[in-house]
Amino acid sequence: MNAAAEAGPVPAAGAPDDGAPDDGPASDTAGGEPAAADGRRRQARGRTTRRKLIGAAVESLAERGWHATTMLEVAERAGVSRGAAQHHFPTRESLVVAAVEQLGEEQIAELRRRADELPQGRARTPVVAEMLLDLYTGVKFRAALDLWVAASHDPGLREVLVPLQARVGREAHRVAVELLGADETRPGVREAVQATLDLARGLGLANLLTDDGPRRAQIVRQWAGMLDAAV
Image (cartoon, rainbow, N blue to C red; front, side, top):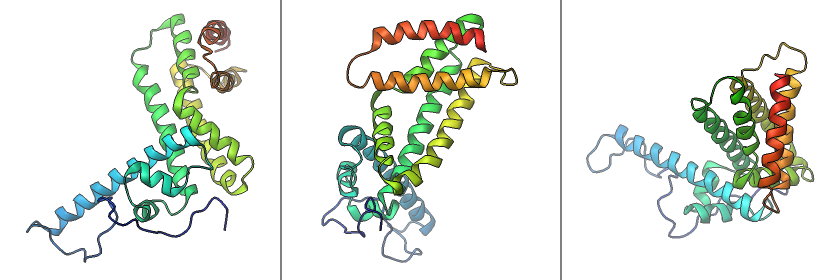
């Protein structure tokens, strides 16, 4: 068994209602209501539990790192039993997959949400460049970074994380192209967009230990001019 995998479910005594499946038959009713309504409530509780667990995992990764982010730690943060947590996510790896997907979806959704606010013409590129560079700052980036570092030493985690991160990266690249209105059939345009995302990661690293805001602002202005000429 991979060292990252957790032991089997160990339900906590007295844990709150957490969305784990009921022991009774699916045809039971609650309070005289049809079984279908009861099933929908359980599904809703299950979705709520998953969201809590994913959010707790991201927080723990950012604050404590991969090695301290155990299933028990995440379950306690989410306010559910360990057994319920492992019902939804049998291993830490499966929880990480969901957390990375959630992080990527949130980042892409934020970019798309701000797309309608973008100016047109040459004024658009600096705003988009700043948006893309801001992807790699804050708690979400810190959580992802700790996973990357851990995966470099953990073959099991790397096997799970690499294809997932590649998928998230492709989606970020696609959205960047859309926001910039870039034509990737032109030579060098694809590389310029990818270089923007790579630069953003590097600036995110520089911002982890100290406030790198003033230097970032200067680099964004300079890079935006170069990017505008390239795309």
